[in-house]
Image 1 (cartoon, rainbow, N blue to C red):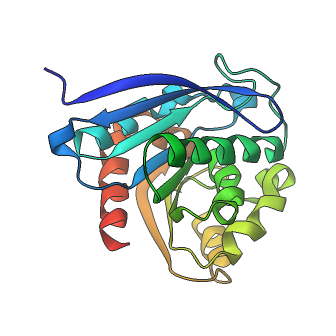
Image 2: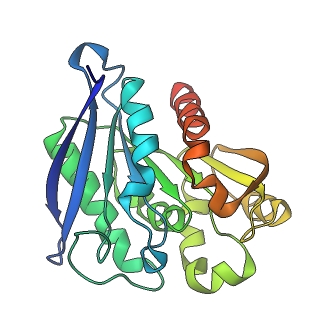
Image 3: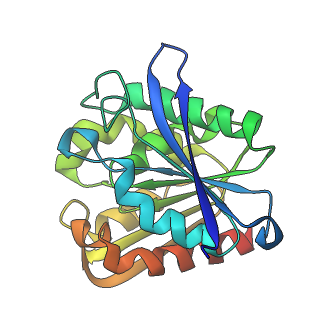
Length: 223
């Protein structure tokens, strides 16, 4: 007998895009908290989709937390077209979070973004009152990635909401030095967790799912 259930829904954005969404729910008697974790997948243009976050979502549900994944516009079976810089996708994150509050009876959301999903979700943090914290898994802060995502940096660095940045020490898009330099100007509570020897795309793989779940749970406990 599975310790969680999965439900599918369609969420519509304010500009008419329909997003395919999945809700991973723990058993009623195993729910730890009303907080819901919304997971934002890597870059749609390079094939990013919600399936990449399924392992983390299952792990969180098995630990008593409701987790939500969704395909951003133009990914999977969601309608619309992906954007190069991820600004249209910020609307997707906001729409899903509003839907979560209305349909899952919560007033607390933790936003978790993976790779390009990190700058996109970071830009949505202060647009949603119910977001109480933010976790980045491999934020692309480096020079080349900043050409596409640099305009997202300001939003997440300025928010006073608690933030955790997880990164592999061999991330090809951001060096440890670049990460530390960026975060030195960040407002509010900022934590980092470096995974020794892990590369950017490696960290997105299933081998690291359990570790990501544990880091997210530890962060939740500190909120």
